[in-house]
Length: 142
Image 1 (spheres, rainbow, N blue to C red):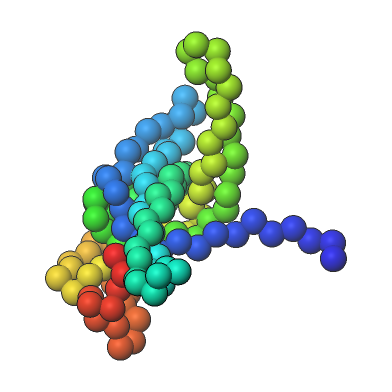
Image 2: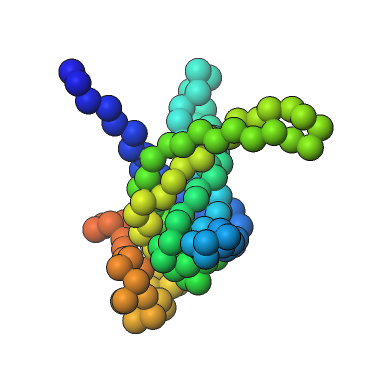
């Protein structure tokens, strides 16, 4: 097989408000983290909950929209790719971080937010109001 694939889908909640920065050339970059919960049955038969945290980077107009419309606790669907980045600390140690470059961000809303952003974000190219058919807040693990 002669192909490569680097694709990630995450559905979770923001752990903090997005931080918007700009490069020297003026390109926008939004950074935020998403918490993703996983429920599973342990070896003892008891249900357990595991939470993982992922750093998200969104470039350009999409990043500006994330900074404008997303807030801590907001549910979001991130489609993107993994990227490793290396840097050197002030004391000379090399560090590597893995980030998710968000290519498509879907703004989701809970039952108390329905319709709240739909009109504002209609020109952003993002979905601001999504809920699976037959879902209720009690069945969502986060």
